Length: 397
Ligand code: PLP
Image (cartoon, rainbow, N blue to C red; front, side):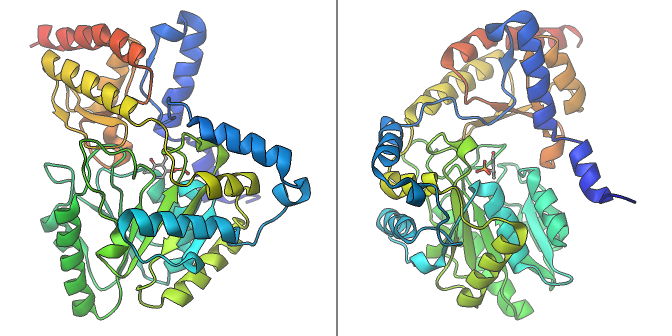
């Protein structure tokens, strides 16, 4: 065969989210932008803060272009890594070392690199349903056996299923809080419980079990919930971060990996991260955006607008009688489909020009994800369509 069959399959079948997004793009050309209620994709709708533009202009005007557009160190510019370290240590009272930070092209690259760096033969990776579908892709590409823990009623951690899934081959667990697609947030007590459980399992199996905390939505958290930074609670941990959502920069591909200074074999793991970055071709993240981050690492877009969207959408759909998971963070609402098959529910919603992602690819059946990172005006206009959809089902009872 002249090509890699597994890669062909990945390229040939795009993600369900992307397919729906493409459908929406075409549909908008026919019926007009404001008549398609496209809740398919997690593209931030809020502008980056003004300081992002100002800093970029300043960098372009004042920094020597051979430096600005040149290669940085493979692991990333040192002053940027120091800024990130300072921000993390100040905000979370953490113990991050800038020599354990690797700058990458967003959370996607952070995850692909980290999983590759930790893998050895026979290793298994645990994810908690519902999960970001691309975990499966990165996992299989590294070589892990991909193990899914069933959802718990609150979409946090189902310990009975975890206990059945964990074994001596378990090397890594991915947690994702605030969660895509459920919006659930692991609070401090949830992290303490998980850390205590895993420390026991490390002793039982006599080897480290790493937590990868995938946290592109870390700052998109509502109602004054305190974010528990994983390295403060569990030594064998790594953070995969991205500025895609917090600064509304998803197309610029910038993020980082932190290896906990207290992780078993921390120095070697960091070198393996650098090696995996090299092997996967992710050396030197985009330099202009590295220099930007050095200046704006403490900033975020105006997150209060997502909260306004959440409150309006949640309350309106609740009033219509939909069953929903209350989202403490991210910009997704997980809603029970009005029939067991979420894919046929999605098809019926489409007839009302409501684009909702079925939960199947997130590892859960019977739900849809509503990405409410859209304008409040669109959310308000969409409620009529949600109402009609509900009535259609009610009339069939
Ligand atoms: N992890 C989760 C949970 C996500 O939702 C996303 C993107 O939507 C990513 C990782 C990838 O983020 P990035 O665009 O920074 O690569």
